[in-house]
Image 1 (tube, rainbow, N blue to C red):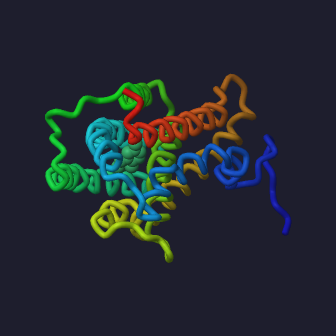
Image 2: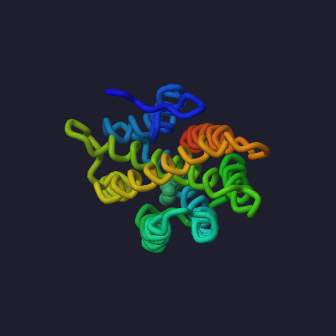
Amino acid sequence: MDVKKNIVGVDRGEVIETWLKKHRLIYTGATRHPLILSIRDGTVHLSSFKRWLGQDCIFVRAFVPFAASLLIKAWKESDNRSDLDVLLGGLAALNDEIAWFKQEAAKWGVLLSEIVPQKTNEEYCRFLESLMSPEVEYTVAITAYWAIEAVYQESFAHCLEDGSKTPPELLETCQRWGNPGFGQYCSALRNIVNRRLERASDDQLKEGLDDVLKKAEVVFLRVLEYEVDFWNMSRGDSL
Ligand SMILES: Cc1ncc(CNC=O)c(N)n1
């Protein structure tokens, strides 16, 4: 098959695929972390799970305004109306998710009022806040958003695959991000990102334009690093 290449030599619509090949190791580090592997093989320490749960409750509260800021960028900058529908669906799901976190925390006896955000969590939330700035391009911000969602989707779907021994009391958590609907949502986000990056690489022909493609790749890698650090907090030795 004749694959068209644009000026930066990237196959059309394949930017994310190229990144995933190039950064395989860190991507696998984020999506196959020891915490996830221990959930999947049933050896997870519940104290680790609870530490993750408490920290993630805090993270998700910062993720909501980030998602809202992305909705604004999409409305202002997107070349495709359906982006807004995809993002609004994500925001609606976050409403359920926040309610679920409260209920799940209560179920495990995790007292949300007493959770202290760890340094990694605070830094990750600050990073999200930096992406909310109007200076940050829609393409760059939605790349981060897709990566954040995709890591959880791939991680938790792994715990639901045939042969996994995920403890029954953790199945609901895994289904939250590992269910097929969330998978489709992540594919829709990935399609948006690929479309935007393809456009960005075309635009780089024009003089004076920032290298959005490079910025998006840097942001993608930072998300993966933060996700690995975030899982690491569950070990409880990072305070
Ligand atoms: C640290 C982290 N990364 C990704 C997600 C998934 N997105 C929203 O729920 C999450 N909850 N927490």
